[in-house]
Image (cartoon, rainbow, N blue to C red; front, side, top):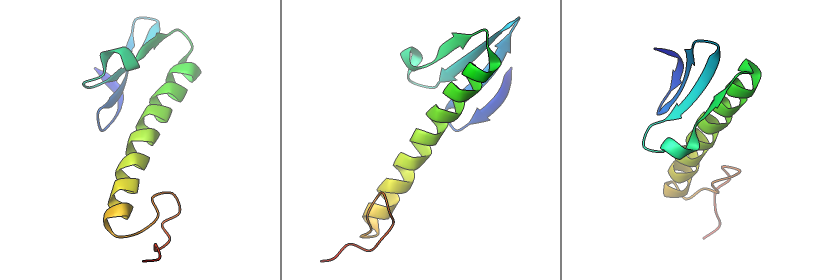
Length: 73
């Protein structure tokens, strides 16, 4: 059972270990004994995916993917 889930990224607890799973990317997750390390991996993975989606949306709107500023044509 997922303790936390954000999009394709899940953080679960199995016994005394914490497992980060990313749908479609089995090699990208990890198993941790330290919950802080597991949380950091979970949040970093979710953050990078959300930022990529936002960047793609901004580019479609003619904006800079990193700043959101309108691009000069």
